[in-house]
Image 1 (cartoon, rainbow, N blue to C red):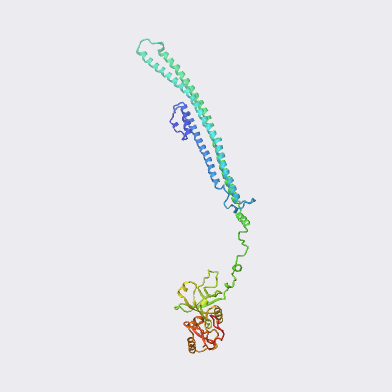
Image 2 (image 1 turned 60 degrees about the vertical axis):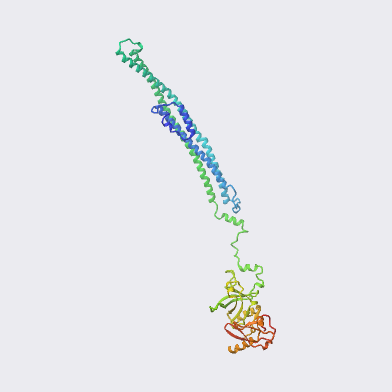
Length: 502
């Protein structure tokens, strides 16, 4: 085997077939004409074998791609989740559902294109290359056998001529040294003639072999042209198939792109709005308002939900270290509570009372101008209610009339009132009135004060003696703030529980 014959392709089938073919071809001197031609044919055979390997690899790639695209198709083979949100109606307008149908169909087209390309590569390109491979192999055998005959004839003639030349030399050397008789066959002349004859035959064999080589070279040129054209055709078919497949894949993707671009941006939304108009909000309808919805709420207009009186009042701080008044929003409810709120807007935050006085357990003092006070326990369960406990709350209305209005409403729900509520007729001096008030309070017992008492001052409770004649009672005072205002004596009518008699 020649040195270059060891550089065989890596493909096992090619190596096995090439090795068996090379063993059948006679060996030539690689430096001889026949050896060079045979080695060149072997090179062409290996080149075609490499192309076979390449096309087979491409064929396998298309087969593998078909399998991979089957996996791709599987990802979109199921119907769309929540697919009813997309338009399923056959219209002239392309929607998302149509795009997925095209995507599925074109993905299947990619699978088919790969399988078809694989099949055609095997039937055309690979078939032609295998045929060319066998043709080169057969031509190499024929050429080797033909050249081998001529080479052997030349070699035989050369060996025969060489023997006669050596024989001629032996007898020429012994002819002058010995005078003995020689045979006719050993006569140098006869030997010379034999050398000429054999040399002539050698030259004829060499010329015949040369003619064979020239003919082989000429045929080799034509054969190489055929090989090159076969390779070119195989590459052209490969380009047609593989390139056509690539164009087909590009076209399928372009069709998917075009389908997606044909979807009007607002089409799906408009179709969805038309289908689910019964669920979606109609933007043309006015927004809901509290005034429209509140009358529909059950019990919202129940009398127990209406305030008996409400409005802003100023209240003096319960903290002895502070002074002045702070404004709050107060409400007297049918549940007989006096509630304090920071403001009168229940929409801004959940309205939790800052202070809650249960009026049946409270005591109210008669108003003094725009001022009045209520003594009771805060039941709002806030931090201030736990710290303050029972305390006296001093209020100031915006006017005396408003204070009287608050007093009248609270009096109707309060369980304990002062002994006098009428407007004072005269304005006595503070010293005189203090003596009268002290005399009146001394005539009352503690038990009666707990039942029907009125605050005469921030520290003294002045109950009314319901057993004694009302006309005999001394004048009483209602303490509102810091001033003591006398009130008229009550009439002789029976007093209501928790309220002064009129």
